[in-house]
Amino acid sequence: SMKKRKITDNIPLKIMSVAIAVVLWLIVVNIDNPTGTNYYTLNDVELINKEYVESSDTIGKMCMPEQNQDSIKVAITATKKIRDKIKVTDISAVADLQQAVSLDTNPVMVPITVTCSVPGVSPSDIKVTPQNLSVNLDEKETQEFVVNVSRGDTKPGKDYEVGSLTASPEKVRITGPKTLINKIDKVNASIELDGNTEDFTQDVNLTIIDKNQEVLTDSEMNSLRIENNAKVTVTAKLWKIHQGVQISAGYVGTPAEGYQVGAVRTVPDTISVAGSAEGLESLADNNNVITIPEDSIDISGESEDVEKKISLTDLLPDNVKLTSDSSEDVWVTVSILPAGSREFELPTKNIEVKNKPKDLQVTFETAQIEVRIKSDNKDLDDLNNDKDIKASIDLDGKKEGSYEVPVKIVLPDGYETVEDVTTEVVISSGTAVDDRKENKE
Image 1 (cartoon, rainbow, N blue to C red):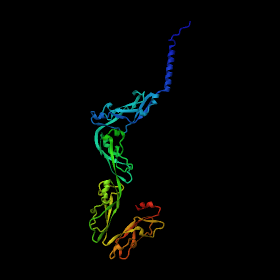
Image 2 (image 1 turned 30 degrees about the vertical axis):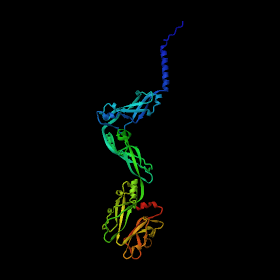
Image 3 (image 1 turned 90 degrees about the horizontal axis):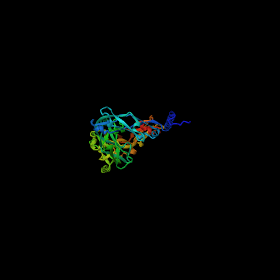
Image 4 (image 1 turned 180 degrees about the horizontal axis):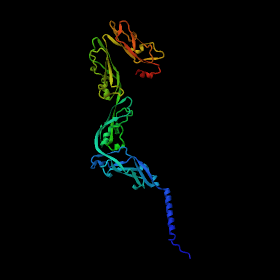
């Protein structure tokens, strides 16, 4: 008779087949969605609860960022489907100062907690190395700094200059770890001028420069507390340029016996200034002339020309300044001649050039030269610059280069020169016009 089969028959075989099925199922699932570990690198760990060390028993300490804090490595273990969704931006790391084991070590070790916003990743799936952020604590210090305003290479519009740049507030208080505060060299506010011709105001963020002239890093900035949230308002006042302002100069005293004063000249003879509306108005009331006080130049007892350098800076009206490309100084020359003589200006184009070198060009460095002439019995008013004064130079044997050469002057009877006259000439091959400067040096 046939045996009835019981469910308990062949148990080992049955167990085996179920096990094989499970294993096969696991293999299939795992080939499809295996568990594995991905690695990520994070460069910033946010330090939280910094106030805790400022207010706790270690009173008045602040966090000093570690120099070149190393990045941290994060390992996340999860199935492939979850891992494929994780981007490094989904991972964040914080170090909570309140969790530090001890505040008395140096540096203080602050545990790092990493979270991942992708669903299905639990804290136990995440490993981080190192596990702690090293934080240095330092005495708390507060200092005041002046705000420097700069505009870099930016420029106002044509015919305008920057009259003034001011920051509000003009100075800021900064609180932070002493070591970092002592590193600060200056606090800058930069504005951009973009061809502006009217006064304007801009809100800007402060930049802090250390003593190596480098900008503070983000972590250093985050370790500081800057009054007014590191913001200032900068106002640029733009002044109009006025060209052709005359310079007037005089002198005091009398020259030596037998001498007289010829002309008074200034170099430059006109200057450009920039000014506010009120400033330019007060200049106009003065006929656009800047007068050098006469007692700046004393010629008492002099028998030769007197030359003096005068600074213009203090002579300008309020709210007027020299343009940025002008020199602050002006040279004043008072020419002193023997009594009964006079200075005549002779155009250099009237000078005859003898023995001009072949195939070379001759140019005069100035448009005119001064010739000092006297007469015992003739009237100097009768002497005509162009007709009566004959001048020549002789360039015999001269090659390319720059020379100061004597000028031979021939005058009508009864007139004579007071002193020898020279002129500067440049001899060049004509193509090398740009070399004039070099040759002169």
